[in-house]
Amino acid sequence: MFELIKQYRREFVYSSYLFLIFELLVTPSFSVNIFYFSVVALVGYVLINIWLLSTYQLHSARRVSQYSDVLLRVNLWERLFSYVLLPLLFYTAVVTFLLFSPSSTLNQIVTVISVFLFFYLFLYVRTSYEKVYSVHRMTRVSTDFVSIVVYFMTLSVLSHVLVDEVYFALILFFFTLFCFIYILYHHNKFEINSILLGLVSAVVITFVYYNSNFAGPYALSAILSVLYYLVVSLWNVRFSGSTALGDYIPPVMYSVMAIILILGL
Image (cartoon, rainbow, N blue to C red; front, side, top):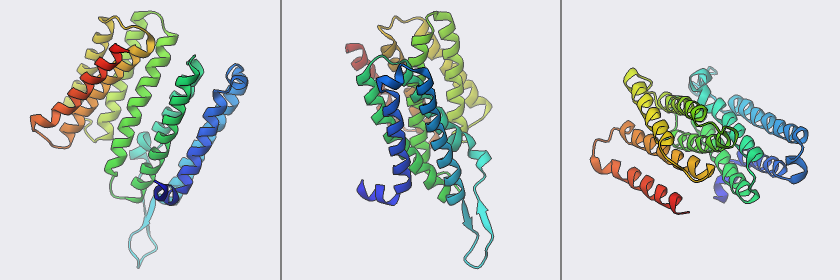
């Protein structure tokens, strides 16, 4: 771990800055004053954008050969969502969650987890930049996991803001569909059959919400996020080219265990 931090000092430093930002946001003197909260949150946005721009400049180009000064640069437009929008959406989800969450303990847990995720997200984005010709495999894994965390945090905020079940169900459906489309796009599986599968999956998750009685907003968000994880995990197995039934069993078992654990709390 220390070797990893030493190798990626810059990413570690920016993650540490975000830790300070999040800790300030959960400090009572800042969290109760929306102006101070907004100013500190804006500083975090600036930091992330500085990292995004500087990392692109430093690591997105490679010389064609040692005998040429011609640079081959990553086409950022093709990876715009995963390399730019996802970190910003993740930060937005964390900030919004900290704003609406009444639990100081949960806020600290979210802060620590988010900082680790930002470090690894920064790390893998940089690693993928350095591989000009391809997206690093671990980048897909890390960004998929971040999308699950964003999904949970967004639903947690919506469950506090929206009390009408119909409105929540509509937003849940479109937000889930958007997340599934992102996963398909990120895995280069943006095809009509895959989109229809994502549409059906979004309908199923919305149906589960509308016909279930969850105890508390966090239980609701957690169970829906487990279902989202299940769909994404099964897709990842299929995208890897596996057709063996045994490869699909672990995600199902993990999801069932997680749901039982959530319901038992």
